[in-house]
View 1 (cartoon, rainbow, N blue to C red):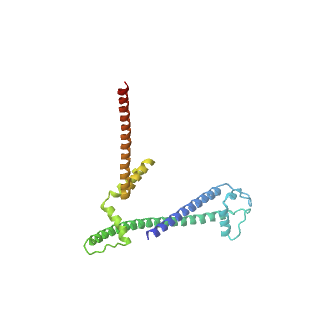
View 2 (cartoon, rainbow, N blue to C red):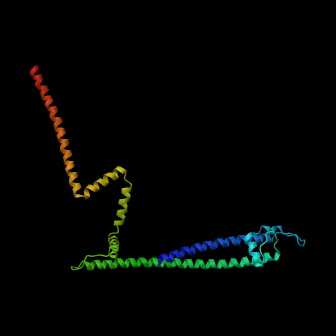
View 3 (cartoon, rainbow, N blue to C red):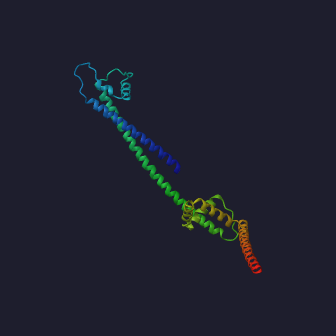
Length: 242
């Protein structure tokens, strides 16, 4: 229902914008005709009216159809037709203005309806969370089944977030911190998470670290023993041959 009202609201807004553009165009044409009607015309009977040639073609066609003869681009307009055309355009402008006011009223009503439906949806969501809380309370008694449907699973997450209002904020902060890390820091963090989350990985990492330490100790011991043997041999040779 809310989506349908939103679509109708969008269509009404687009229609209102089109009507406003059409009214602006009609007002522009009307101002052009009023400016042309104020131009001085020759007094000679049957003289041409050069200023009427500037009237837009759509207005000429509308006037020609109104008087029942096909439009002629070369024929001049009688002076009485311009006055009749002004009254037609003025009445049409008033109709479009009334229609625009009607569309604006419908737009306001639809916005009010959308806000009311949104508040009703929020209230229904809160009521559903309360109902899930009661269902969970009843399931805590022995002998109740533990099976859940999709509706309970959907409201379960909302219920948990409601119990802990800082959980979503903490997740967002952790995500922001993770995105600000350098690539090698991300690789180290991912490897650490992988090792800590798997028992086999933790065992392998423990023995691998122990083996590396034993190897380092053996190398250091062999190096120290070799140097000690070398010094002892040098001292023995020095005592024997001196």
